[in-house]
Length: 349
Ligand SMILES: C[S@@+](CC[C@H](N)C(=O)[O-])C[C@H]1O[C@@H](n2cnc3c(N)ncnc32)[C@H](O)[C@@H]1O
Image (tube, rainbow, N blue to C red; front, side, top):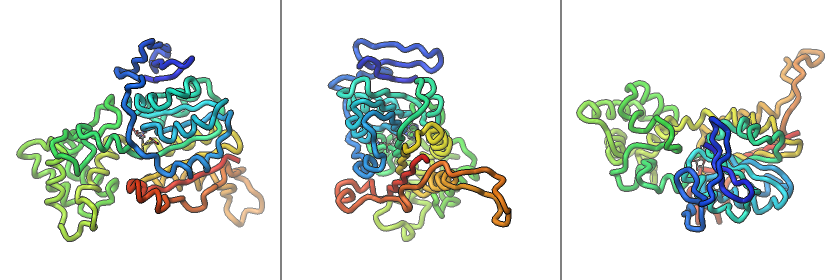
């Protein structure tokens, strides 16, 4: 389903049939976008660095692939009086909150409830052939983590169901992963996606516990992980279940799968001089972004002893940030979540 503002009014696009239905009462996807729709308390990370890095044109077309509460989106929308912003999120709650926040910008903004992995087909279905910039602020929002019943948090009250889906329309939940995956597969996920050195012990503990009864809540999982990890090895200030929860969340949402196709697709439609900004929150995401950007920035790949180039490859982008930008002390003092954030910016040639 897509949600769009057309002629200043929220509308719903249905992907299957492509009709555009208007909701005169502003009802969108089961929730209401109005002055009363709650806005998220998420603080946008490295906001000024992103806005400056995108070098926004007032008449440009921009994509925010991870709209969330609309912090970055509203800063972009404000700067494009004659332009257009496509704000995408797979979470309908984010779309509603972002929609509420972007109401003042009317039909300058199109909200799309979808996975950013589909950005290529989203843009072509909106009739957009060229864009001037794109932003991806990867991962989960503070709102998702703080909404207890969504099951993302290892540290909040432990009776939340094991869910962790960013889109409630998706089938796979954390319960399915924790209770349904084989021990070896669980170990691989916790090791790879959580970069957790005690993955084997944690997977064994989970497998043992679920033989008695299914593991149902975030609190039960948290406690199992805590009991499997040697207390002395837990980093100071960190929670023993942090890495395992990250791993399961990545698996549930297929979080790493869409990054490369989305970056390549936006790059393909980016106008010369247009920019892409990506914020990552852990090394798995950052490695993908770094590799894709390095590949797109690379020219000839012929062996050095070839007298002339036969591959015909030329660079597609140039790197604006030679090293990733990180949050400054002022931002970190008010938003500790920005601590692990890395911002990379590239420009289309
Ligand atoms: C860090 S938050 C973005 C916050 C936003 N920049 C703001 O300022 O409020 C990440 C958002 O991206 C969304 N998201 C994550 N992966 C996604 C994907 N593959 N497709 C679409 N949205 C995604 C999440 O649902 C979440 O709302």
